[in-house]
Length: 165
Image 1 (cartoon, one colour):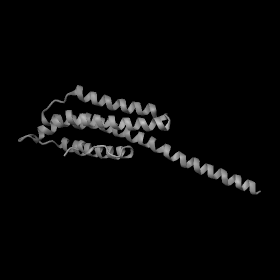
Image 2 (cartoon, one colour):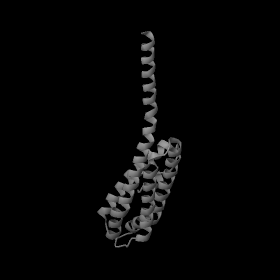
Image 3 (cartoon, helix red, strand yellow):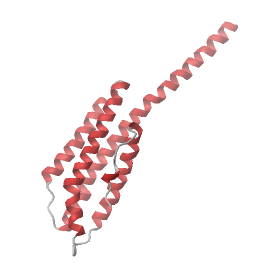
Image 4 (cartoon, helix red, strand yellow):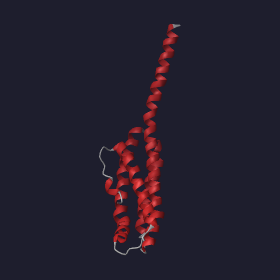
């Protein structure tokens, strides 16, 4: 009888240990989902809000450039969806690489697409744009989300330069 009790306790300990090991595996998948959601939102902001900002300013957006950034974001999302089932060690490397690539896309989009609109709106006599205020607010929210995601994998990764003041 004592042996059965010991076996039962041992099996419960194993179940608890297995359940404890299962938790870390869920975290990277959640991180995958967070990155996919973030990339999709950034894609949406570049396509919808930023295009409206350009129209408000009387400017024409470089659709080839905007589409190139959107294609990069779409590639990241597709790549992550394909690799969701990869082993934990490879998954961690993929997440780190994707965070860096996502930051590069955000930096380039800010420099080449957002800065021209910001410069135009800063000129004296420039038209006011409600769309720009919405875009700026939403973009800064996405930067905040990016900071949280990047903070889970990197101790120091500059994302404050991505904010639109």
